[in-house]
Amino acid sequence: MAAENKNVIVKTGRRKCSIAVAKVSSGKGRVFVNGKTLRGYFGNRPSLEMTIFRPLVLTDNQDKLDINVKALGGGVSAQADAIKHAISRALLAMNEEYKPVLKQEGLLTRDARIKERKKYGRKRARKRFQFSKR
Image (tube, one colour):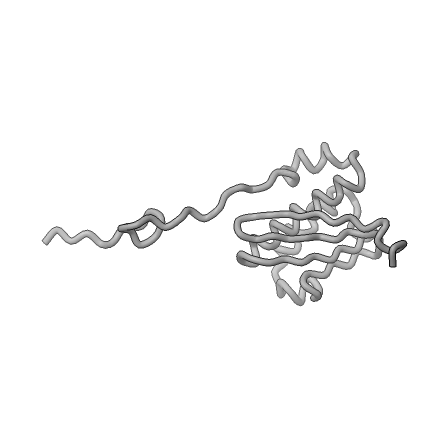
């Protein structure tokens, strides 16, 4: 088992409240998210699939790597972006030559936009209660 883990790279990606831990190893291009296939976890949503495979397509590694991801928190779109971030970081750890390509596409930058906190006296962060003049 120790020999199996030598070429496995583990990296974390984040987006909003989502966290994804990706284990990337050489293989046949299989992607598993929380123990399910990509289609089984996200359903038939090609846009999310394209988001996740973007770093692999740019570096031409679609059929060369197996990826096992544990994703938690947030919604499915944020989880897909977190997975994309984790895969990008793992690819960079594998080969430094991918850095210009991934950086140019903005795949190595953590998207720090998070939900704004609710304020007191308001319904949400900025929404106000209905104003009645009379």
